[in-house]
Length: 200
Image (cartoon, rainbow, N blue to C red):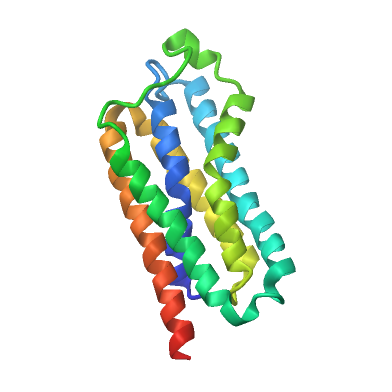
């Protein structure tokens, strides 16, 4: 997998975390303006980045187990997984009402302080399920999984920090557009992989 493909994959897989962090950043009084605010951004981005990096690694391990049984059609399965995840992202983005993101229970300055690390962790796990499916597809390809995991983790940390910091300004419309672009990127990457294998 080329560096460009790894970059596309990393960005596409980090979009869910970016969209989720937009909602958290939209909590009134949550934007970094003090030391506690920056601590919150760093903690959130570290949790999202860590979980998003581990998820494809788990999927990759599961894919290795099944690889020998499906080696004849591995490129089709990889394409199906990437296209399925990307298509789901686009569908959910277009189906979501165009309203400002809700900060959820406990919104407001006092609600922001009640957001615990476990709440952020649970959100990160929820957004990483697709990344696990993508990880399965990586086991069917010739990739350096360590490089991919590092790229995904660092990209997710950066995207989450941006989303958390700018959530109050960007709102859900930007999150929807980003999710559509990320979904299309994953579908396109799956198509590139399939074409490469068919042309070989």
